[in-house]
Length: 166
Image (cartoon, rainbow, N blue to C red; front, side, top):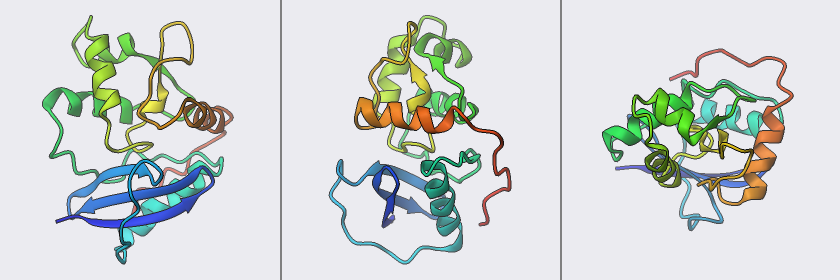
C-alpha cells in the first residue's frame, strides 16, 4: 500500500506516492488530484528537501533516492537506469537513450517509455530532447516546465552528493 504527500515547490505542487521500496509516483499536483497527505518518514523528508532545492535552482544528485519500479516493464526499467545516470545540465536524444539501453533504433520505444514515466524529475525524462534541439514530447507536464527545469539545471556548479538518509 502506498502513502501520499503533496508539497509546494518553486515549479508548483508535487504529489509523491511511495511504498516501503521507494517513490513510485511523482507528478505535478495539477496532473493528479491531490488526495490526502501522509506523515512522511525521514527518507521521504530528505527526498522532498532535495527536490525543493533542485527545483529552486540548486541542482542535486537525485539518482540515489529510492524508487519503486515494480510497475514498469523491463525496457522501461532500463530507460529509467539510463536517465537516472544523466547529470543536471546533460541532455540526451531519444536515439542516444535507445543506444545506451542496448536497443539501437528503438528511439520511438524510448519516447513511449518517457511518455509513460510515472516518476518525474527523479527519472529525469525532461533531459531527453529531440535530436535537433530541446523539442520532443515530455511527460513533464508542459513544454514550459520542461524548458524551465532544463534552464535551472544548466548553470550547475556542483551537486550535493550526500546519499539520502533512509
